[in-house]
Image (cartoon, rainbow, N blue to C red):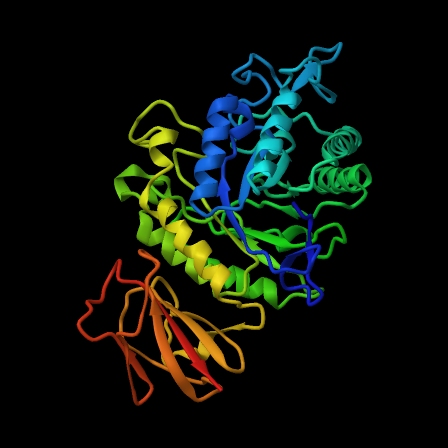
Length: 427
């Protein structure tokens, strides 16, 4: 595998051969902590076959990751003389040590051609907030731990570092810890791997650390609420206006089968909601999009109203299976020269029905969430060819009408679940 870097125009992620690379992610936060080697390999192979190329997982996990051992009875950190889990004392003794297991999974991912977005720690270990904690990091031990981890894993090529871990930076100490951890990573791997930061919901890393030199690209968490405020494409659009220019992506969008706004009585996000977010993210000029499932991120094994299925059952939910079409579309359609356009559709309204578009000098792509007729506006070329792409099946077709600038779909219903991608080509 080739290491990843930032493109010369600072808008995209590319390989070291300068090949465009769009991150198609999954949040498997508890992967290192909860799954044994057979289950981990099954998970990775399944996601690879579905078109994913980027797996996000946490070393010091959220769900009591310091106290509760992994399937081999190991916890990530040893305790020091005061009885506190110590980030400078990793568990590395023996073939099935905690970090040996972490390496096994990273190595398997590499064999499959999967990149790993690795969080050194979940955010509750420096800002407990609503989590379990405990808060164990200081500016000093954050540097030592991060440098050791980066040195330990620098032999691999399939890593992106993700700091933050779903927590805001609220105090001087929080900023100091993150800054120290970032410096430790850079010193440990010699700057080999890209670094970003995973913020809490409805926010971007740009809110906290955009100007930091160590931040290679921004990450938003558009989150799990309806309505989203702001919407994911609005967060991405804002990041694109910032200086210095840096790529940006959605690292945690609305999860499939997740209770809407965290309440089961509101119902659950479905495949339509997932597609609505990820296609808008793609056409917002993002460098990646991370899918997630309510029962997979936590590797759930006990069913309840909040987590209605096991992680294994949930691996094959509709939106996850449709990711192969998303991946194939990205491979076959080069968007690197395209820019987002709010004005591509007349009277474009913000919200769930917002038509997201990207345009170049001779082509344009529109995501129409409800499959309704739209009137084109400000298309900078004469349209010679128009086709459609079905996000649910991966099929291309030409059953489209273009009359007086109005795009419509004869014989095809409109409404929720009838989302469609329109491709315009010209001279």
